[in-house]
Amino acid sequence: QKEVEQDPGPLSVPEGAIVSLNCTYSNSAFQYFMWYRQYSRKGPELLMYTYSSGNKEDGRFTAQVDKSSKYISLFIRDSQPSDSATYLCAMSAAAGNKLTFGGGTRVLVKP
Amino acid sequence: DGGITQSPKYLFRKEGQNVTLSCEQNLNHDAMYWYRQDPGQGLRLIYYSQIVNDFQKGDIAEGYSVSREKKESFPLTVTSAQKNPTAFYLCATHNPGHINYGYTFGSGTRLTVV
Image 1 (cartoon, rainbow over the protein chains, first blue to last red):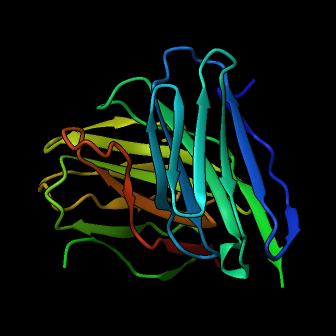
Image 2 (cartoon, each protein chain N blue to C red):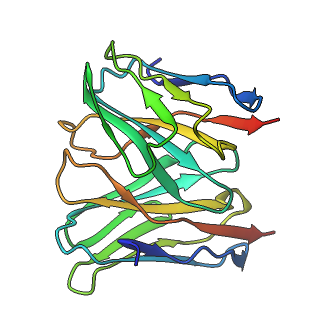
Image 3 (cartoon, one colour):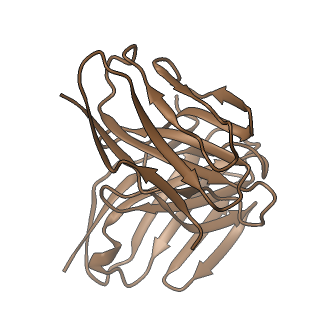
């Protein structure tokens, strides 16, 4: 069983819909949680960063962490075709530790 | 303009050849990483280095080698021992002392065996 699980998708939504992405993990020591966006044939770029539990909002993006359930989520409101990409979750137990990545979810936002 | 430069963008390797992928950074980050990404797959860690002149194997180090002689540079050699090297290779850097604990990625090198 992988340490971080993420549904590969693809997740197809109409423009303007809410995109809901999530990851589950097994290591209770994880405290730092990140979401990356990767366009085709490009390197991933950091989208959201959260420490410990709670919510964080940045524009159309909201990241949630539920450590009791070992579950993290990313919501994209008012989705746009430009949001079509692969979204990877990543996490670590300490600031200097290596990140453990999920396998990524491919998202398609149709005009 | 700070960032990570990976070169070349595309690389073709013949069977039995060794090839070297370049990764240069001017972010002054201590840690550097090499990942392999196969179509529809996540990132798999090949090697990483947290300080100059030191590096550790990741999950799939067999058939690869690295060096870290300078803080700015972390080249990856794909040797002939790597039987299935066709993949997208990503270099990343990390500054553990920064409040943003995420990695910064390069734009990748696509390696194809011909």
